[in-house]
Length: 317
Image 1 (cartoon, rainbow, N blue to C red):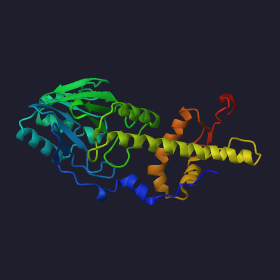
Image 2 (cartoon, rainbow, N blue to C red):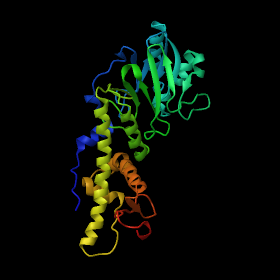
Image 3 (spheres, rainbow, N blue to C red):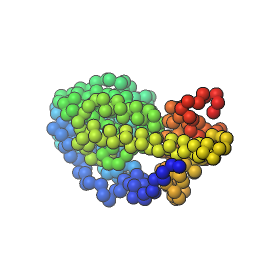
Image 4 (cartoon, rainbow, N blue to C red):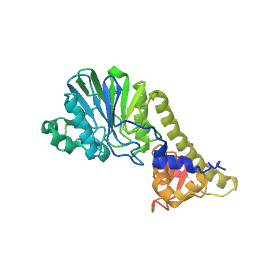
């Protein structure tokens, strides 16, 4: 029988809200290295932590901007004041991914300087944007950025390796506090491993404080996700084993509700809907892609998932 994991309300409160009151204070505009200035997007919240981080990168008159926040008036005021005061021009505007809290400030930026309309780059670009390819290099005085295609959180997600700082702009794949969410778990774990291969010592995330030990943080992210995958497979395998122990035929199988109850006991329905359910669905699909579990067709909430014995032919399940 699978070991039940005690339901930890504090853990899930942290997952859902980032425990906003416990987050460290970040200045609206601050230098995080000799060549990187962070400008907060002015949009703090459950998912955005202290707000979206946007970064001005380089040491000369011409620099690079990474992300644009969601378009709050305070962000455009902060960024334009800094650009004017420091006599800075932007050579490139790089977007880590399409989510609105990273791209929403683009129109205001172009309204400030219409020449920037030709300098906006994103993987899978919109009609007026330019493409970012894996391995593409962007360079200004004091900064060399190499793009790394790292989908999972979003289909177009890019990270940027800043050679001079031995640092990685991690976008939303790795945050300064807590854990990120993902669109595709298998792809996301693969991207985390690609990020680890870069070997950068420091991380500049899309949300939260700078990451001082990026290799350890990425290892923690990978272990956290893989542990959850193993836990859920163990629960499903236990269901099948219980039938075999009782001498009954069948492959077992559990609904999402039964898996949640087995893992965490009784939890509020809204927690299942907004936090546990989406993540468990990602895990189950990854296990299905890995041919470790199968499922019965039908309505998603009532669908039964079952473990595949490792030695069983696919046409027998």
